[in-house]
Amino acid sequence: MKFKADEIASVIRKEIEEYDSKMDVREVGSVLEVGDGIARVYGLSGVMAGEMVEFASGPSGLAFNLEESSVGVIILGDYLSIREGEEVRSTGKLLSVPVGDEVVGRVVDALGNPLDGKGPIVTSKTRLVEFPAPGVAARQPVTQPLQTGIKAIDAMTPIGRGQRELIIGDRKTGKTAIAIDAILNQKDSGVKCFYVAVGQKDSTTAGVIEALRQYGAMDYTTVIIAGASAPAPAQYIAPYAGTAMAEYFMYNGESALIVYDDLSRQAQAYRQMSLLLRRPPGREAYPGDIFFCHSRLLERSARLNEELGGGSLTSLPIIETLEGEVSAYIPTNVISITDGQIYVQPDLFFRGQRPAMNVGISVSRVGGNAQIKAMKKVAGGLRLDLAAFRDLEAFAQLGTDLDAETQNQLDRGYRMNELLKQGQYQPMNVTDQVMSIYAGTRGYLDKVPLEQIALWEEEFLDFMREQKSEVRNEIAEQKALSEELEKQLVDSIKEFQKQFDVAREKEAGEEKKETAKV
View 1 (tube, rainbow, N blue to C red):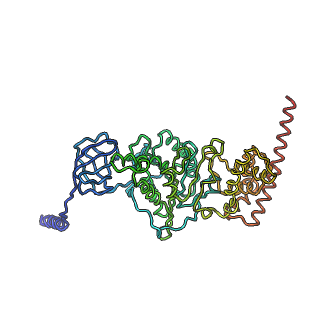
View 2: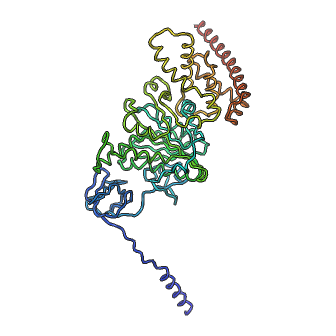
View 3: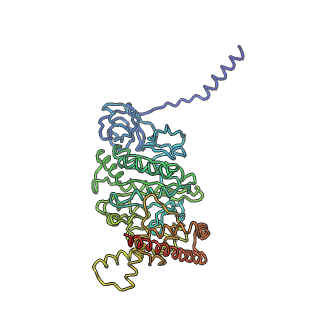
């Protein structure tokens, strides 16, 4: 019994030594008014901006407006259950979301809660939704290509790992299709992808998820949804939440790609919240800090220096224009934050040019640094040639007689346009792109009828894979075109051209026989 008494005494002594007299003090307030995803709360005098608060009925909120006698809180969840006079507690925490490999392949909401019916996300790792962007010293130049698999983009407006490339254009012109193709092309590249759907119809987002599943891209992609039916606070928070999930991989030395579809809707959600909180409206009724709203989001994309692991986060923000008005308020804001833009033009889209990229005002401020040497060599003057072709095409429509040189330039322009057309969900390997664009820019397609360009390309790439695999593999391995390799490629193109001509002549002969029989 004596031994037991000593044991009890030692336990009590230890408890006394480790006793912590600190009290858990939390402020409590009450709801003055609530509606439209916003609550005005009285009594939380010590709450910080961006701090999480808890409502007695369950939902959480974010302290957004610190006023003299009350706090404006944006409600993250179902605000219809909150009543006036309800108790509100401060938490002393900032908003964070789950991160890590566990969120990859999942469909989640703006707070990281699963929406795909696959059970809870079991991870102890979280990251703050709002996080400072890396400074200048923490970054390194963008030099590694992020291949989108789209010929027109990889050749003329290349995207590098760590870059921010804006996709801009009117609605229904293929902006999302470009972003989805870029995600599909990351298969087996080790790049983790994040697709943030802001203000989109649920049916549209479901179609995107189905396409990602069908082509095996959900294995490395996370979808964050704040749809058109979601409250404004969720639409505002979703891009930051997606960025926090993607940043985890960047700070762990890996590469990530994030698509914001689209930031116009986020700006509208932020405007709605700001007006309800009685912040002074500015141009087009947007609050004065709408630029900061987008810049602090997009500045988080970077390629970190080697000391920090060399990871990268590439972002593809999407902005919707009205009637092609790229000089409107939100489009010009985001253009000035990003490192280039891909402008998709409605009339090109309806003419059948897919992707409908306008080469005149589409630009990449990283340029050739984000291209492999072979692509840089074959596509060097392509942008200027196509821009000149557009001008010539407009001039030719006046019905003026053209000299032979101008007519040849026009003919090649039409063929290059045809060559740059690409079906949806059909990203192309960069080696195939190099060979295809080389044939077009060096004039080997000048004699091929316009309607046969797509067929020529398809059969030529099959020919290179099956009969000239050593040349194709050499280009893929070296990522450059030496004089010797270029000579082998030219010989391969000429050999294929003979086979193609013979096959077409044979087909034409058979057609004539069939016609004669009729």
